[in-house]
Image 1 (cartoon, rainbow, N blue to C red):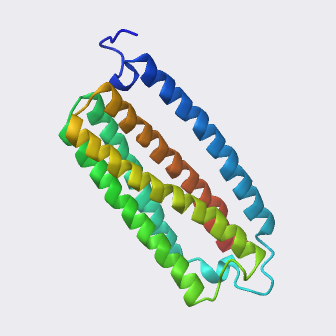
Image 2: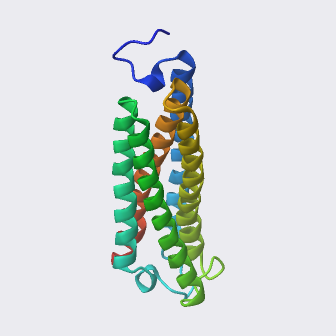
Length: 200
């Protein structure tokens, strides 16, 4: 496939286009995974077995800060994509680093939240079906974010070594898609788990 002035660099080769398409298919499978976890959590929400309920555990300040960090990180990741299209390695790397730091802040807060639930509230996976559903759903998302952080570090290293090429551009674009996907999943967690959990 020939490169044109109107073709983004990540799509400038047939291999790049095919791999990006393949990643969209992968994200479709991830949607199925998280849909199942959401369904299980919502069914089990009222099954607290006399243990702590969502109203007992959830703190508005905590999950609002987590949401703020992840939303801003999605924005900075988008700014990185703009720099990618400009072939600006320094700008792209800078925005990815900011995204990375915000992601680390999110994971730090989530780990602190889980540790507090377990050590202070004595709320564990074994306490109730509700908590099992909660930890599995939110923990799976957290594991995905942690993987995304490691992946982003690897992409940043490649960008610093090789600059913006069709291959590194594809990798940077795909990690951006992944990060935005995790942000969308968090919006559903924010709504279905935390906000709903304060009301029901």
